[in-house]
Length: 471
Image (tube, rainbow, N blue to C red; front, side, top):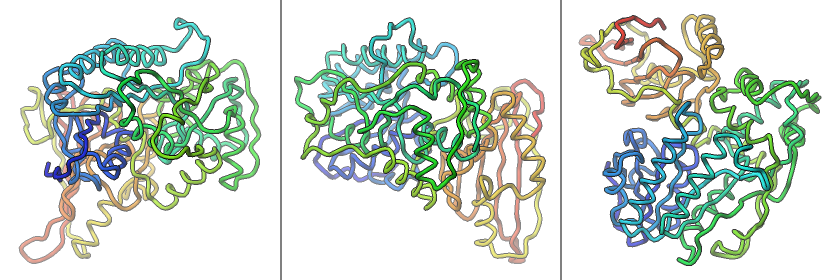
């Protein structure tokens, strides 16, 4: 990937650049004068970001020491923004191994500082009473702090910003349910923080002196219960006052499925979010304020953070979303160009028809598919397929689109992922719904020899099990 690397500022490595925070951090670092290198398993997923030509992108994985060493060569500050929050069984071992590899390679490469974003750990709660995800986040932070490289760990609770999983969960629960029977954790006190303040702390941490090696709590100016956050959200959004009836019988597991049915956030991601609300998560200190460069800045309040996030949603200016990262277990295999993929069969359904419209007009329809725009054939069948996917733990249709008109490689699109896009010509989607195999959907625009616009559709379905999954 071509990039502009002519500046002489310090070089930062950003892992997790395809994720929610990483994708927003890269342009902030670039604007602050840093040179940026991104480590990504699928570099093409960063191709269409507005900042792509300004940053270097290298292929690699944090669990592969060779690729990590290569990515860290010549790096001054390394941002570690990856975790396996919803990767299923074995995620703790994966996170532990990846953190140890990164710590060791950063020390060998002479990295000046590691910066890591972690979760806010409840004060006074024994480790064995924490959720497995919070325990893992704490363990990763400890490994990095013990790496021998000066490390800054920023610990945040609920991050409020357009497209964040926490914000989407809050938004959909409040907007869709005027009367709610809720889990008891709605009375838990938390300290939400605006995503802008998290990004400011991340960028500022790159300039901390070498004698700083510690964790910092990062939070907004208010401590609220989740119930208060829902009521305040409704007020900012101009909704009628919500009626909230907490009940003690909804366990974290049950409440995660409840969240998964009501919001776009699937149960696999909702569970660690709801489990973190079992205990009070409030900042114990605010030392980060005096460590950041520049004059002290008051953190953004909850109401203002919600207003800013809603405005970006309404203006279709959501730069990254929680679904920017792939769904756990989603395939990352080669594209459907080889019928011999994994030794399985390739079934392909081809359709083509002439269209009485210009290629440009047809492409706008193709690129605008999904989300609130809907699916243009058999909408009821698509809706039923989405509900079935949700019922078996899939993502369903509610992830929608990041932007109502434009797509880029790596975007989630309902229960698909944009695998490839050639503007004006081709859109390829990979299924992230629950299937017994893998599936793609390709939509194309061509002009035939007579100058007529034609729509082409191909649905290749390779299956290593030699079983044809249905769409």
